[in-house]
Picture (cartoon, rainbow, N blue to C red):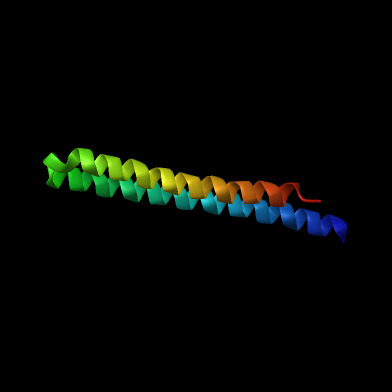
Length: 78
């Protein structure tokens, strides 16, 4: 029974990490696509849009790293 629980913990950690990475990839991709579209519509605001995009991407990556840390803790838990 102990091995089953350990195996399920590893499975949950792997699935959680995969979902986290996929979600972050889609989020940053959507963010970049929207920023490029906005820069194309208003080239004079490109610097402000770029700054906002970088800040938002950093927040997405921060949340992703936090979720991955939780998955690693879950996987190494005995």
